Length: 354
Image (tube, rainbow, N blue to C red):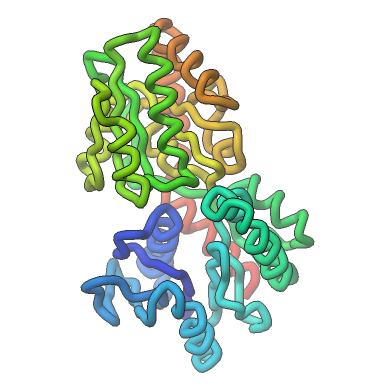
């Protein structure tokens, strides 16, 4: 098959995240396992090449984040007969090719609460517009990553929805790695308002009242970084690592006792599975996406506030048997998330609709 994927960003973009990782892993799997030719069209970024091949996937880069949707739309229309499928990846806004018979919608999450978090009261306008735009796609096949997003789509009138979840490249061992000598909490993700990294600091401070030697590490960069550093100035036991590569990320996660995930919502929460792969349970807010990735009481806990999160952490850190059982459950759970399986699932959906 010849496949075109339209996505705002790509795997090489410094601002990319879980959606871009998912897109690349599925694309390279389709190329390597099924002999597909896959083109991903995305926006330019500083020092990016206009064309590049990564793991057999051809990347075309046009325009910027504001213009790529129009340029992608034009490219898809002009070249529509060359592709068996054109995958329109919707991240707050899509590429508007819902009328093409060979188009498919790929969506990780609705932004919903994100709009209010980022824009305040003004977020009401994009909140409404997002749903209206998505309804244009409701007759199309939709692929998403979680039951939470599937339910959101069903409320908008979608009927043909398939789930292909995320996966990880770092497969777990049978025994958990050695944890840090002192209790260590970790935050992994973009430092942006919708991820609520300030709540991770609040949770850590609450835990510190009961366990004074607990430490917190934050892995990631983002627009909130400088503000958070000012907030944390003078606090002992908190470290900002900034961007880390894969090796360092898993090394730090393996030493951490717990991962903090206080997001407003997620598509799925791949950082939770990455942490589980090194025996690190997650404490996350009870929101869409995290309800899909955290098995509360088994691989971590879903909580409703920073205070409840801190109570759960203290409970776990003070009960060696409870914590030990949860780390082993995390390792078993993470083994379910294999990219080979996800590529097979994606291929079956494409083949079924051919």
